Image 1 (cartoon, rainbow, N blue to C red):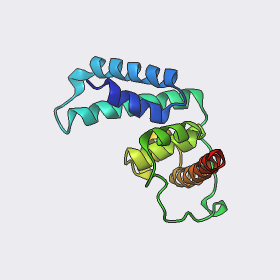
Image 2: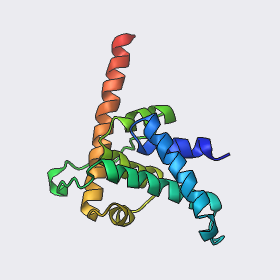
Image 3: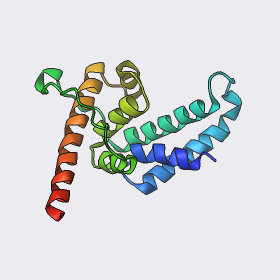
Length: 157
């Protein structure tokens, strides 16, 4: 019942299908292994999603260096347009898979999952400013990737 939803969440965090599948399977294992710890507070689905996201973050930390730091003063101010206003889900997942792990993780946590920068910083053991800068850089990179994609489409027509 939850496999399609959890697979889509895992795909947003991981670079490829196999890694996402591993995250989903380990997430389910941890859910079943810790089912007795669910206290009935909040939604059960939300509790399960939190476990799955934490599993994805563990795998990312295990295989990638997320301790990238860029001072906010070194980054151009972002414009106010949303990166995902007019983008299909499949296109979003494809573009996310092209982002570096740090960008992809923080974009997912902040934009899609709704975490605050403080929560992201605590979960990833990074500074709040690093979380903010990675989000700005992720959006900038996504804009670049979208422009390239649009340019490619225009040249095909």
